[in-house]
Length: 207
Image (cartoon, rainbow, N blue to C red; front, side):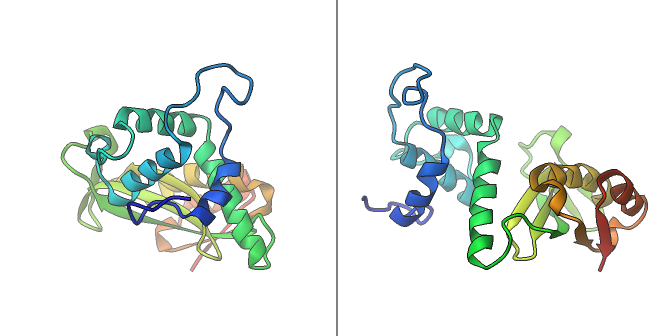
C-alpha cells in the first residue's frame, strides 16, 4: 500500500494483477545476482510515466529511480518479449470477462501518422504525403473489442499495404491460427489481399 504520486502510477488493484505476470528477479529465480536496489513497482511506474507523457528518458522526474536504471530494466524486458506477453495475458483476461474466447478470431487493422521531433533519426522517419505529416507511422491491430493485439512502427512514408505484411505476420505469431478475418480500409487494397490469403490463410476484407 502506498500513495500514488502521478496519474500514471498503478493502483494497488492493478499491481495485484501485474505483479504475478512479471518475471522474478534473477536472485529469486536461482540464477544468482544481487538483490534489486529498486522496487519493481516503482520501475513500472517510471516506465508508464515516460510512455504516457512522451518524454525523453533523461527527463524522468528525480523522485523516480535514475533514468539509466529504468531504461536498462525496460530494455531487458523488451529484449525477451515481456511486454508482449504481459499485453497478451491482460487482453485475454478482459476478453474472458466479457464472455469471449481468450484468443480473438477477427481483428481490425489501421495506421496513423505522427509528427516526430527533429532529433528522431532520418532512417526511422519520413513524409506522409496524404496526411501531410513528417514523422513516423504506427500500424495497429486490435480485436473486435478494441483491445491491442500487435503494433508496428515505421517511417511515415511507408505505405499501409507494404507495412501490413510484417504486421499481419506479427499478428499470426501472436494470435496463432485462430485469427481468420481482418477488416481494413481502402489503403490495404491490392496484392496484399491475395498474399494474406495464400501465405497466412487470412481473409482481409475491405470495409
